[in-house]
Length: 340
Image 1: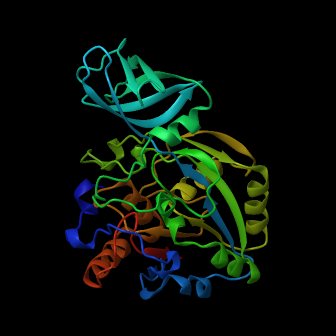
Image 2: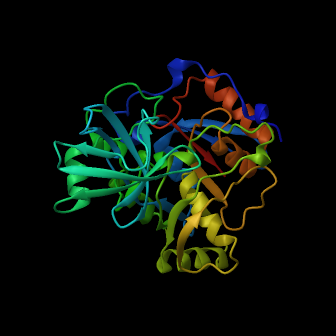
């Protein structure tokens, strides 16, 4: 398929700049993947579309304050780092701005020397591999010096950084939130459990590659960046039991979906961890995922292609036309869609 088949007109004012005061106060569009029928609801109505025996899979990653501002000690030039992924002990792949003068061998200082970085190498995509030096615990230093890396389409300041975290976050490592999970509260999860809906957790540390616009005109030429995932044994067993009993596996977010499908491609559903660059697009046959809760995505993004694979391209594009017409809020702090 061509890239322009996933394009649509999105008025800038529909890009949500702030989270709602209440997580569950967002709107919910439902999309029947078989018929293409849509419905307009409140997010809390999701419980009516779930039933005992269904399993929700949530991504429990935690966003790190991945944006750092430093200086080159020799010149005083200002440098901005965005941490992408940990590649070894105290070694990270980062984006650097401005990058032209930050070559291998360069040292950058953050927080008056509380944290220093030596640039070891350049990557094919224009990033850098750096080694950090510090006293104490790296993530504690990062909490002191780093900023939350909000997506570039969010220009407003965030008053509470925890609103860019899910209430069930656990494992540090993402540079962007698994945003479909932002709609949930502990109380709402308890209501689901009381109804007999089972809940399992996976971890996928979200990188910028997930949200990167697709540039290739033929989408099959697009290459996904690899991201680290972990499928615990208890979640693998829960998925297997759900499938055996005829229940539905429902992923909360495209990151959870990509994790589950990465494991599903191996055949037997067992505990595993590693790196995945799975690219789900129309024509893909889902192995485990039956339904998906997700936010509204960027035009021409790989996430548009993923939901089109699940719900059908024409169904998705018609639903997005309706979402624009009905003034749904888009992207990270926006409203939700349930594809079932």
